[in-house]
Length: 493
Ligand code: ADP
Image 1 (cartoon, rainbow, N blue to C red):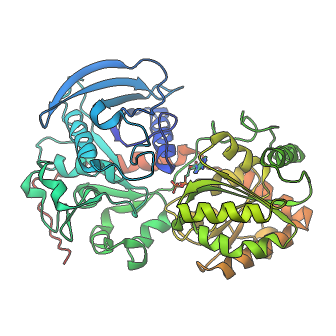
Image 2 (image 1 turned 180 degrees about the vertical axis):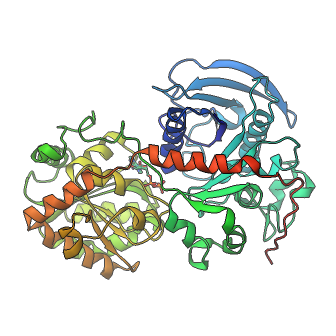
Image 3 (image 1 turned 90 degrees about the horizontal axis):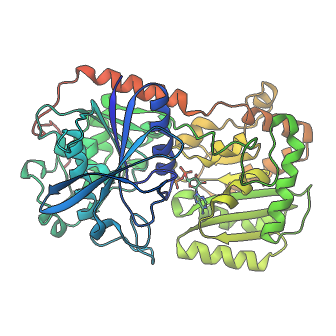
């Protein structure tokens, strides 16, 4: 049995802004299900949703600050969660990273550096828990300093760093750094420095014993200039230690047969019941009620990564077809405004729900026929997997986890029952529109459409398979001899 400390800045259902929370809520549970001793560590945010009063564990003095460590659990699980309680940094309105206006907190470097230092204290068994992990599994830039700081310790656990999205790197101006009291050994271009800025993510990419990302295709893509954000050289240098493990999904939350948020539960044997969800979705969003019209859905952060501009460019052509379109999301103000205006111009064809709404997200997955996900890049992506299980055919661009999870509906893949959606290559509105037209055409062939729905609904996206791969990785680390002092033969410039 391995003792694993899972370091993350969000975990569903405690606190969520995106896919990282889904992974952090599910993977530890799946690892515990494989008999491992897993504990999570996460900041105690104002908005955190705790399943009861947390238990006080201890107080730690780090960097002249007194921080409390509290304990709770992931609801409906045996997984313990350590809460880093420092109200001055974490008890604020807004989300974990930004204020209510959507601006990054000015002291994010301090906030997450403190979080990392507390994780290091726990990892080194200095938090009065009488528990030292074998593995410290860090996730995204907010935990990036942990592998770096641990290299300065003797008798440290092995470290794994998972990239959920390389676009977010935790880059800070040097002015910020001085107050962080980071050890000088880490400050050089082959360490935490990235073109004279402090890069939290490099703490993981340079110093972790192993690096993973959330799909095999994204693991290859980030080693190229198009997807590497200037870190491709480092990632190529570390390619022997870098692998892709596809995320699973939480089947207790995302299962059309048991989903409490949808109007009528269904499965592949009672597919017509899916239609109740379509009419409920139309009712809720103010669209004309019509069971037979093809309904397109989209849920997500409204940012360039997600190809929202491609969709907006396609919209006049899409809405000229016999379809309806429901969008749920928030993000870039420009995209929000354009979607709002388009919904105003086409009130009978398009509805835009601005904001974050989990029940509505479930109803869209259940009620739509097609799910649009034309991402420019997508480390793994979850909604295309949810869509397949809900019999909602995804249209995706061939990138990252989308390429690894959706099989394009072509005559041969329809015939051999592997097709699950529609895949296009170029990040252009015309390529997306071609795929949309293929979806519209296939919808008119009810029997072919049903076959593709059934293929997706029967797929196994459970966490068990992914958790087994992480466990294999942890076990392969048993004999790694830790590097002390960050002496790594690599330069960036
Ligand atoms: P990312 O992590 O890049 O945002 P993913 O597809 O990996 O994208 O995960 C996004 C998760 O957040 C999914 O579970 C999705 O349903 C959810 N989500 C995103 N935007 C919204 C929203 N506006 N309302 C409800 N859920 C949302």
